[in-house]
Length: 282
Image 1 (cartoon, helix red, strand yellow):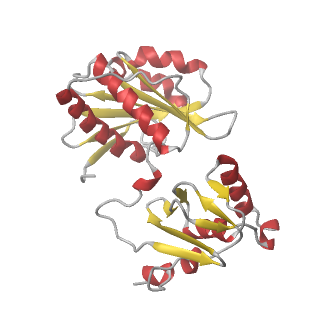
Image 2 (tube, helix red, strand yellow):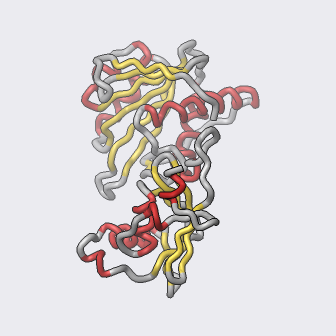
């Protein structure tokens, strides 16, 4: 992903309230804020334009993060219809400063954003269907460039629900060897990422928890959650990860693999046997 200069404007001086975001050399613009700022968000001139919008919050049935992605020729008119949905607590919408987004453009953007949200598997996508739109090749390429900028701004505005787990190691970051965490007859592989630590698909975990989980149950709860979701499957004498899984820290990852409390800085090692702690102290 190319480097970028972002201009954030805090309308009320509070980073959690109404704010706008722009990128250098980009015709797009983002407006974001909490649901409590609804009137102020829709009183802005940008809300009268065509664009795509994202509503984020928590699914009341599952407790998981939830998202709704839509498009509108008038953001203001369309979003008012979503006041009947009570799951969302934040809104972000994207428009073009030169007002050159057509109905086909925004339908294409909506479709691609919904696809990305489903692919990322970080949230419940509440859209009933994916409309999408076919575009001429040149327009499609222009919209893919627009999407690239949207993906750059979303995490800055506090939304990482469209970021794929496997996108953790990006160019320009400090590179790490692929690390391994071995215990008993199981082997796991992973590496640090900006959000914490990524355990790779095919990694293994012990089949039984340690006695310590009775006092500190988080690893047991996470293992049960992963088993219920199919992220972990029981292979009899061990468990296996069916997909890449992001953890908040190396220790959180190691605890699930070990079946109980673990120090990730010493549990994870490179091919030469050097621990993560030793590598970070260089």
